[in-house]
Length: 435
Image (tube, rainbow, N blue to C red; front, side, top):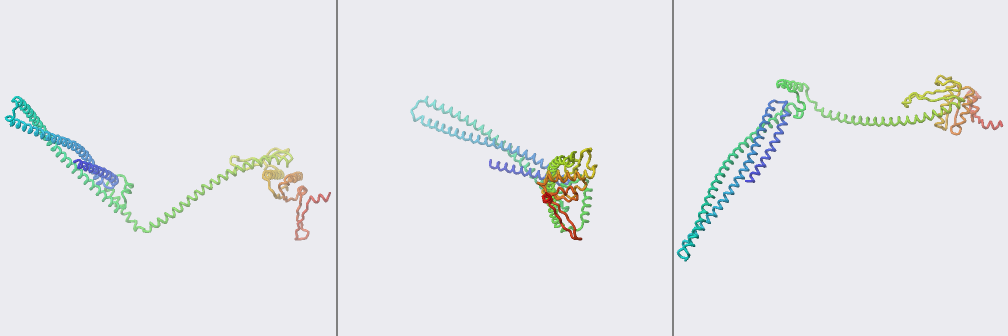
């Protein structure tokens, strides 16, 4: 009986899990098909109602099973009590028969043995009392047995009634499962028809859910869409291959774009680093040249002062540079307002300042002193001598003052018509000859 009960509980658990799965599937199908067919919604609602009734019936069935198990246990206990009473009654019958046998033996031996009548009477009375007590106990046990049998009968009748109820609820449960199965089959058929007729899956239909509309309006819209599909004509079978080719090309170009964007980002990063380096070097060089220019200018002019000024010191990459000069005895003003000779000598001072900051081994000057007067030409040529240990100058000039300070003179002469000749003079050797 316990094994059958356990099997029934396992079956009930299986049915319960199956019921939950069916209810969940039913809910999902109802949500997915609700917008396409009102009838499916109605059937889904009915299935939900059937599922609810089934759940309530199963709860009642479970309670009845528990109650039935308790009553079976009470029946088993009563049966055990009846068996125990029957065993006790059998023992009492045996005791009674033994007492009767003993009384009969005593009565048979009463005439044969020489015992006192008084002792025999006491023994007989004692046995009679035991017999009466045994008879009374047997009567009590019989009454208890009758009562237990009556109770067992009532429990069996109640158990039969509960079994009938359980069968009824089980039948209701089976009917609900049949209705759920029909709803699932109908939903699956409608889903297949949706896929075959409209080439739309249930997920796509759910994603394309439209607002609530009258059924006739929906049918008209479906007919219009079908007509539009027919007007599209024959399907291009090569569209898939064309799509794959274009998709592959798109992926390739997208990869190229990402590479270019990464290269652009890297390039801008390098440009930023280069700008910072240019700013740093330009700032350092400007400050050094500015300092040297302030020192060279008064040496060339024999006094005065000059300064390099940044027009936009906040942006060193685009800033301009202005030269503010004040020769001896004149007011401080912009270089563009000076005479040609002053501008030329100022530019020469800036050149010498740059050479002092960044010495070079070789330098060519092409008539840089042409606009200078004789006094400034002499200052210029003598100032060149300060760089003779580090820089070699080639000066193209026609000014006598510059040529006088040169170490070697090179000239081109044309003694014959159309024939040029190079002439060179080392002034150091000439000085020694003069001496």
